[in-house]
Amino acid sequence: MRIRDIQTAVIEANYDWTIVKVLTDEGIVGYGECFFAPGLTRLIHELKPLLLGQDFRDIDRLCRLLREAGVTAGPVGGTIFHAIAGIETALWDIVGKWLNVPLFQLFGGAFRRRIRLYADCHAAEGLSSLSSLCTPRIPWWMSETGETQHFYEIHLKAHGGRGEEAAALPDPEAYARRAKQVKAMGYTALKFDVDIPNPYSRDDFNRCLDNREIAMMAQLVAAVREAVGDDTDIAIDCHWRFSAESAIRLTEAVAPYRLLWVEDPTPPDSVEALERVTDYSPVPIATGENHYTRQQFHDLIVRGGVHIVAPDFQKTGLLEGKRIADLAETFTVPVAPHNISSPIGTMASAHLCAAIPNFLVLEHHGIDVPFWEELALGWDGPIIRNGFIELRDDKPGIGIALNEEVAYRYRRKDEPFFASD
Image (cartoon, rainbow, N blue to C red; front, side):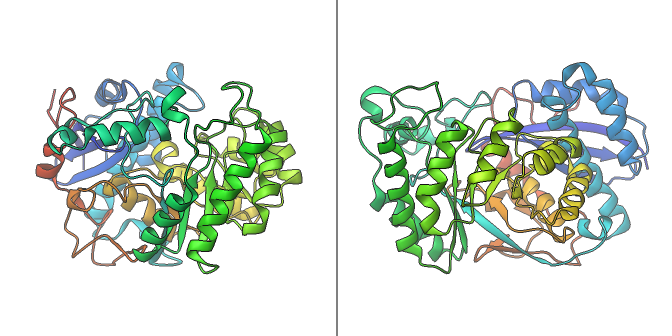
């Protein structure tokens, strides 16, 4: 019942998917996933000596031990939490396999086994990829496809291109086409970015929206709503870019299109700005992916008045994620977890969503990654079917293993691939 080794690998996809592999003296192997960050694997390997020889069942105690050891790296969030979250998930996977039960049973059992997903559609374009510093990149394996120039062009438009690259207005018809395509896959909820470079932007730093920008964003939302009808939920993402005043005007402009939520309208470090928006917004406001602890979410709910919380379980960890959900349930606030993960993190998140009474919908950010489904072993057919994940009682732990052959094919070449120190 002891931890024998901890290894890491990084898959270069639309983001860096950092996978943690924990090996035990009983031959049980567990997989977990961390939210990306610079220097993440180095940190995990520095934490490893604290865990070797420890009882893998003492998950809460071990995570507290790691947080205390990493207090100088971020006592209330940051990369240390990312690292611990991946290790924690791998330990839960091991305990589930050791007990021969699915992960959701370890968190109190299932309120549902059919987990609804929403598809993140970006800015109506296809695959885009960001480095660990959130800068646009072309994954090395895409160079073999001959599509790198097109990829580069759409990347600049979607992620901060300026000058000539950003001169053209976004095309509402492109948003509508994308919405129809994704709805046809079976998804009943979609999310689009609206904080995109455009010729109306007057200043890149003051967080203020021009009236024409707001009208442009509303036009994009209108096109999506007309394309998918009233039976599909729509959300939009603002990535913390706007002032409270601009965010309020934006919510007023998109209110006629009955959005599921407007996400992250104001900077994550200003609860006061969030409060001003939630006080006046006619549209539900969701936020939380840049927060880590139940104390921080208490502030978002009680002081900020947020309508929907969106923790990322590859940042908070699963146990703290459950505590955050329980806190939100006290205030009847729904939980819509943020998730940009591979199948490893997505399945772990889905199991926790099953055990959360106030779960709303889980993000899926990999619809354009061509090998996303190939990374999973031990599942019959696709993991995601018609926009849902169906959890099973006969699949212990997170229910899948990592296909290491596929993962190696798309690995980051400058990172170790499950090599023991």
